[in-house]
Image (tube, rainbow, N blue to C red; front, side):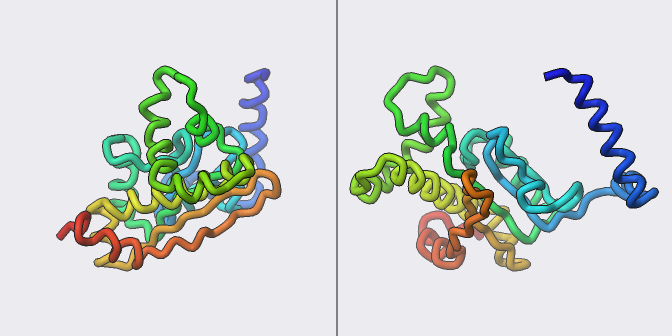
Length: 208
């Protein structure tokens, strides 16, 4: 890749924005007020704002390998805290995608060095749902189902947090689980039942 092209593209983007709105960058500099926190995968094929048809200022984004929400990861936890408590987003989305390299790697028994501790969290998802997954004969369908179940479990991890529970109680914040079908471009809503999950885990994870 010729990086000069990036700067040329940037100049074209600036011109396009100013043509539509001469005050675009002045308004952008006034601050952000996004309604949505999007937690997605770092995969280069999955562009958060573009696939939702949103632009700068409309969505707060965090991306990591396989869209994980790990309680000991200060990066994602800081993003959740800032978005939910300070930006006061009303929706938090965990979005996985089919053909996810992180999920695929977690299905293998190979030693992947520094990636091992990270992938272990996805393997834990497999362990929790192994009865369902092991009943699927087709490897491709098993792979897709693990992508969906991983999104579901990361939503559960979000609902365990104090920030999300308080925002749910105080202003009705919602958690959503989506999958991006990389083969068709479609977003699939897994219809995560926030209330049912919270009720199910409240005995252990409920925080005053």
